[in-house]
Length: 191
Image 1: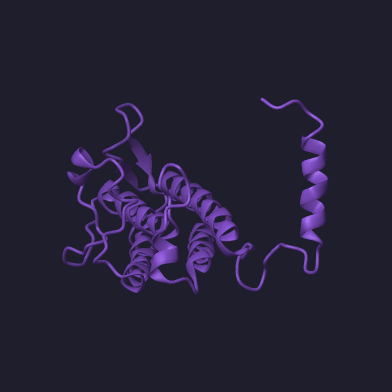
Image 2: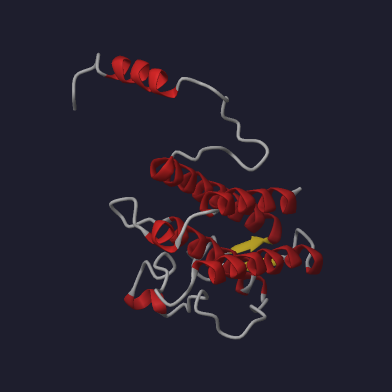
């Protein structure tokens, strides 16, 4: 079940970047610089960190430009959100596919109660299990897939949960709906 929902979160995130070019994927869309491709880079590094060193597992590939070293955060706290210009989107997306395979392999190699230690969590809380890490990472991936959903909708109106099941009514009069909600909000004083 954990593998299924982790895979579903990855699918939702990747659907939000599907069909966009380099510029659209890299454009910062929030005041804090969040981009669609930056979300993918962040999620890739989250999964490697939690399903790798936390359980004594190493990323199996040679150094890759999408793999952010721990010391990079000393000079750039947002290192895993800033996609280097020389890292093509297609390469990062393929990398993220391999990250999913690496993360899923933890479930083949370890029992759910396998002990781990998250080095960046505070002492007293750093000890964990594969089960706890899987739930933690899953919630993080879904949170970021939700961010990507909003960014994509603001970019070109594309909405929905995942391919084949958008969870969005077809043919709905969205402008009328938004106007109705705006009219309700305007009844209240500005802040």
